[in-house]
Image 1 (tube, one colour):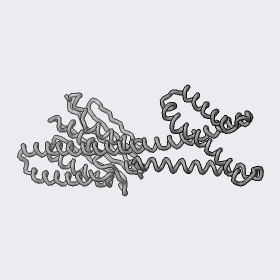
Image 2: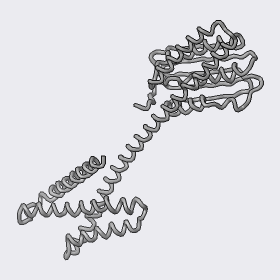
Image 3: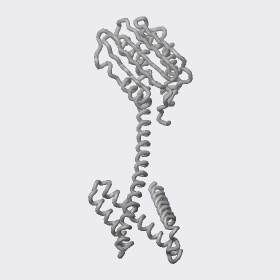
Image 4: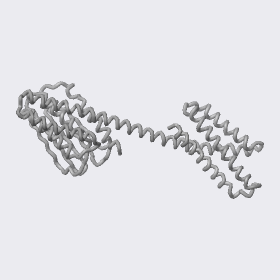
Length: 334
């Protein structure tokens, strides 16, 4: 890696030297006949190019990293001006007018070189920061996605455990349903996006499983309006809101409860609404779980500028309104 970087630096600076040499030759081409020989003409341009590039190299490789980057501005300015003056003196003395002209010429070329240097460095820094941010985002998304899996599994196993304690005849069927849910979960976790109709089908099957467990004490409504088309969404993104409605609504009380879930699709605009009734007595801390914090973070990472989430914790109802523009792609790999 170091050899590759050194090779790239050498090639870049060799190219810069040749470019400055060509520009010097072209700028004096009309005055070529003023020189004694062709050799002296090219030697003159070569010496000018060497002085220009030496000043630029000293500035770039010594003064900037060891002084300017460490905010030693006064010493940096003194040494830079001093080196330019020394180079001008060596090149033009004893012609002081020539020294004066050479000094300001080197100031101009050094300034141009610095502008190119900082522009290139900023581009490299921005590219590195983008790569780091992308890698960090990918790692965080993978971590969040992996958290969803055991979280959902534990809740589902609790549902089966409740049915088995009731000695329900539907327990084997529920186990098979859970098997299908887990199969989808494992398959979707390998993907960045899944078809929206598959994700909503997964939620519907999960609600059917919970409806059997909750028996008649919970009324569940699930309504989809609009054409799903071929829209895609991040997998397992919506289920935490549904789990939250079941766990902190119907599951936490023996009272009659309701869960209303409505989905509206209009072109690429996706609206997801979950409303669940709240028991008469509920602990405030029960509303704060890993699931909701997880999904909020995933939304911010995946649909940072194309979603809105409103959660309204009322006295008797808990309402979640989520809107996503599924036309906008926010995947890590884009």
